[in-house]
Length: 119
Image (tube, rainbow, N blue to C red):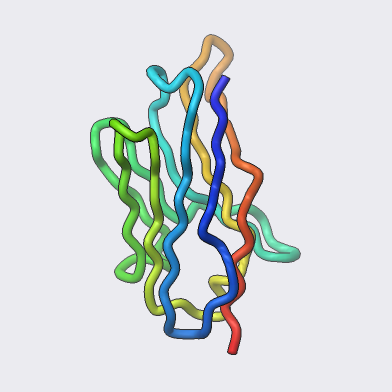
């Protein structure tokens, strides 16, 4: 099993910055990718950014150029730095890790942290 614990959410003004952190523990040796998803009220959960064990990164178009994902394999953490925040970035942000299993992709999720962008 893999446990993910997020921190760093909160209320921020438009144009501001926020850093989300995720601490992972458990069976991490088989994890293929770690990243961040978000879910706004009434919308589906969507990928924000992800990074593989090999170091490649992937960003949603909506955050590209404003966000940076970083992974520290020694500390088993993955952080998301978000700048120039917009009201549409308001959502619950979830840390995600996944691996391949005998039955397919196996996802692990944190409990979520709320981000509110408002003046």
